[in-house]
Image (tube, rainbow, N blue to C red; front, side, top):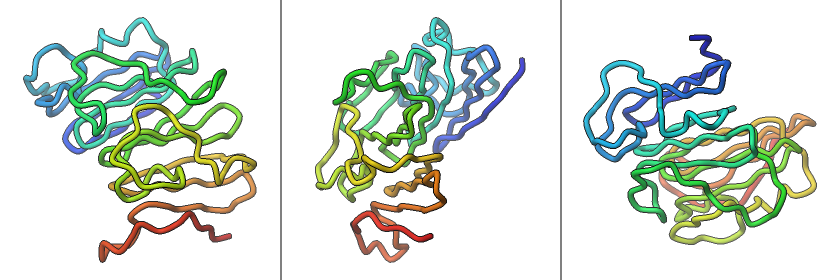
Amino acid sequence: KGVISVACGKQHSLAVTKKGHVYGWGANKDFQIGISSTEDVSSPILLESVRSHVVLSAAGGDSFTCVACNTGVIIVWGTIEGFGVLKEPTVVPCSSAGIRFVKVVCGAQHVIALSETGQVYSFGANGCGQLGIGRISDAETHLIEVSRLKRIRVADIAAGGDMSMVLTETGFVFVWGLQLPTGEGPSSIGSTG
């Protein structure tokens, strides 16, 4: 099927093909696979619910899935803080007009998105500052720019649990959210070079 990338959530898996189709399998009690039932899926199935989109990137959180499409939009489904249960794929609104996203990564209950121009946006849970938006909040339901990175071009993004990380085009790494195994956090955005 020409798989070009794979991703995992807590108990579900995803694969994106050259044609931009998404396959999913695994646990589905929270609609994270993107099918109309809550039955688990034992082998990869084409996600018909997003077949009309050309997917560039897919990622899984604890119980949700998020994709970046060639139209520049971010689509999410499953169960994610701030949204509740999304039984159908839902386009996430963006705080800035004209932004085109090319990659998404997920933490437990949040999403980090990379634009084609190297800007970073986020949405979802923010109780530990994992969105990097300069404030703690329960959850955000629209894409908000990580303002401290506004003038920095980012090459890659990562997320896990309640933390987020980026690699800049100049080789610096910025990390924010709950990043210490002792549970001490949140911490402000920082860098190492």
